[in-house]
Length: 82
Image (tube, helix red, strand yellow):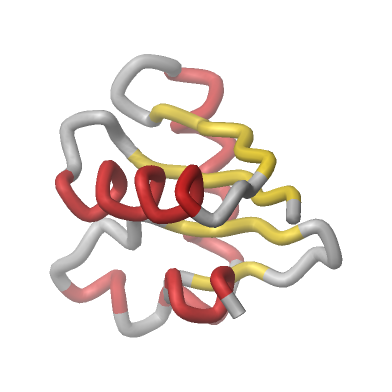
């Protein structure tokens, strides 16, 4: 399974998800928003346009975010590990 994880090395939820994905043998591309302004810009564009983030916009950041090979975007690690 290949998955792009958008998050931050400063976020405990992101670190937890990365560890679980490594345990599952996933092929991971990590977009670290705390270390890359270009990645942050791409993420903010996604967050501004994707309806998935409507609930998150009122007080959350919305990370970690998972982009799957089939184009699916989810905020739920369980969806990725299925």
